Image (cartoon, rainbow, N blue to C red; front, side):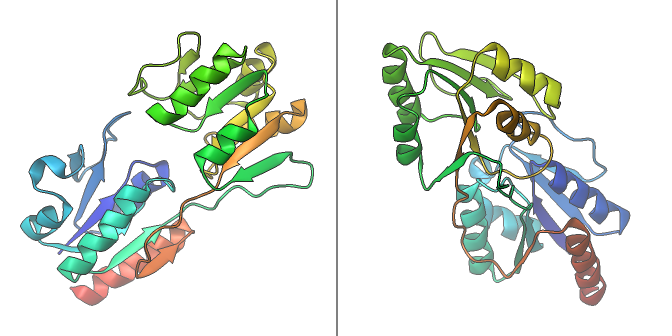
Length: 251
């Protein structure tokens, strides 16, 4: 009996360790783009496309259940996990870390999609992109804004998959980031628009507090709607307790 834990977040790593500590056979799957955690369980790196896809992996490894603890914006992986679990007739659960909540003093504008967000920042003078890997379409639009004089700073954990606009500043960095780090970055570049996703968690939350302090407008991409799973959690302890209970009942 094995649980496939779809990870890549600090919370997923915590859940994987909880499985190990409670004797639950766990396969921890990550993209492996940033770093590989030290865990005393099998780790699957790089996804499933090279080995026949997720459904084939589930059947080959005799997976009993899936716990999706990927990034809140990993819609493609989350939806595929539900599809494969349904096809293999195994349960699928999801842990989603709580979203950031807008406070009365915050200057946020939330957007349903990238086209709406990009249109809203067209007139800004200096933007800070802290929203993961930008697509070619996003970079194409930003390239046009750059020609109009917009200054652009991009921060990602790994190099961009696509060619960046010539004068876009790229910063390679992995969180967590302190308030002082975020303040120095945004103040020195005279940032007037912060572009981010509502990822939740504490690793990159300080940028929101600094934006509030400096009066910088935050453009927030809303979380995507994910395929419905069997059970969803937003509390780590509750997720662990459920897994332990399920494991005891299934033995």
